[in-house]
Amino acid sequence: MTQALGHDPDEAEIEASRAPLLEHLVELRTRLIICVAVLAVAFMVCFFYAGPIYMFLLHPFQVGSELLAAQKASGGHHGPFDLLLALIGLKEVPHAGTGTLKFVYTAPLEFFFTKMKLAAFGAVVVSFPVIAWQLYRFVAPGLYRKERRAFLPFLIASPVLFLMGAALVYFVMLPFVLWFSLSQQITGGGAIEVQLLPKVSDYLSLVTTLLLAFGLSFQLPVVLALAGLAGLVSSKLLREGRRYAIVGVFLIAAIVTPPDPISQITLAIPLCLLYEVSIWCVWLIERRRAKEEAGQGTDVAVV
Image (tube, rainbow, N blue to C red):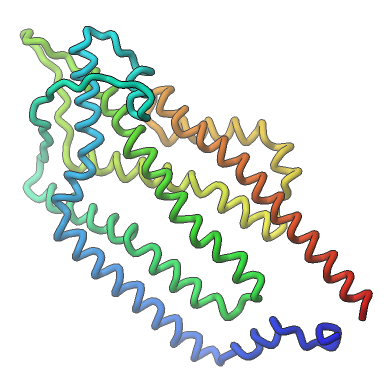
């Protein structure tokens, strides 16, 4: 009866949170200052530890080098699929000793600017939870209670999915790509040798590009679920468009990954699975919305 009289608790809460434009601008300035301060502190910390962080990012290169050495030690009995199974822990490949990994830079300040780029990338990643929370705190007063409850799971799921994509790159994708790159070398003590001597800046660009590509691609369930929440897509539409989505997924995988089929499959298969998860999420949203509408219809009938 209270809702019929226009005294909706959600409406009352939003009315209570109304403020003049100047107060909103002051709050926005405060949120932005917090975000900039967190970014600055995170940048300084990441720059101070840029060396260890870069060494951490070199681990996939070391794993790829070890896989190549193990393949040579076995006389070539371990093929690409054996190495891929070894990366995901389904097959044991004997490790062989590797020499010192060498990286080069060709400009006096190249490594310095590389560390600055690494610090900036790390600062954004580390600060994302704080920035996302500040954004949520700014827009939350203008949302209904049920909208805030619906928004929070996406706020949590987004960084988790990004980390899952980054982990796939770090532990599987990069080692295999680097193994493939190292296997193209021409060595053996002849008159001519072709060796891979990666630049520090090029390697960082490769790592950050793949991390961003996989991390953003893994946001597919979040994007489609939000679209379903807004009524832009339906579970029926997603099911009917499955075949086109699979083609699009493989096309995107071919664009953002190195030109080898295993790398493309490494991205395409998880994205296809995430698309199926998205259909299930949108179906749950539709089911909950139908229950809420049915409940509201019952309340109106009682009034």
